[in-house]
Image (cartoon, rainbow over all chains, first blue to last red; front, side, top):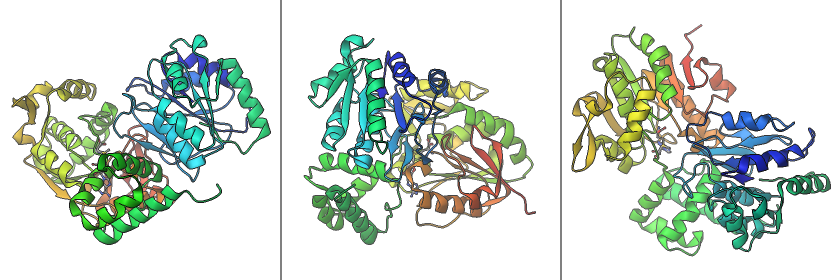
Length: 188
Length: 276
Ligand SMILES: C[S@@+](CC[C@H](N)C(=O)[O-])C[C@H]1O[C@@H](n2cnc3c(N)ncnc32)[C@H](O)[C@@H]1O
């Protein structure tokens, strides 16, 4: 899941729907101030029953956990179910960048990826919607009218590669359906 | 995953070709990042597929150098992570003081900002003249920039801010002067620094180091290569010497971990244990 301005509330509303035994891992990129010292992860932890982790490099991805990209690092998914961090140049003026996460997840996991673009005043994440969809994944954008900053979901939808536009509560419920139908499912 | 991904096979072949032709081993790099860089390089190089790159890499050395530079992410900053420099001042400097002469190794120094940052700390702690500083990278172009020590003027604002956060004792502008619109680091900071080419994937250890800094380099390696590099550092360090990693990097391998105690968890500073 990727969010920027206004993304926190949407994210919190989605995570609220997840039960403690949620069968999927969640990876989150939220655009942060470069000096954010895990405070985003701590704030998010208060909104969900799942453990929220700001991962270290090569940390193993476990089901039922929420991983948030640290400020100033891109977060990538490796095929062997670990997380790689990188300090590559910013992408879409952002590090972490949503595109970097989604693209790597599409390559590493292919079909079983659910990519969600939330509120934000940026176009980050739009480009990788296509990659996720082509790999057989499911693409969701927050319904622009429900977003504080509709620009980012709108940019994603404009690519024509978004399957569903939903409000945050609906996204939460959608995950539950998909999660119970296919516990093998991974998501970004 | 069903049928193998073609691009995946192509990337394997490309990395093999580079290894056999030039000896640079990118096969043990973190895969997701290498894939990303390769795909970006495709459009830069005007190739339609990774397969098209392979003959060019094999026959055109200049083409290879460009690609290798693309794989080397030399993004860096003066006083990146100020808390690390504060921890160095508080917890490492007092022990460095006990040695009449000491050696520092910056492994993967990129364009040198980190090297000058530490040099400034050593100056301010009156320890600079006792130090020999080795700054290495496998990217010769970055190394050349490091040697020159000339940076964009716009970067000095952030550098000054970080310097202050890092506990700087003077005014940062004392350490550089304007030259043709750029910021040239003070020559006095370079006196004790030796820049040289070194590849953590294939070269051997450096002797008798008291402090090794390798920050934001290991994240580009897979576990196996990380372990190799950490082995080099352990071999290079004297007992009681310090190892400083990036803030998201750790000593995850038991065979390495057992040889160190943690000096500062957040700043990722470790101390090689004395012989039992
Ligand atoms: C992101 S920079 C880190 C710079 C600096 N240490 C910092 O933290 O700001 C990573 C550097 O590691 C270097 N590097 C990558 N692989 C290497 C290898 N096998 N041997 C030596 N240096 C390598 C790259 O050339 C690049 O300059």
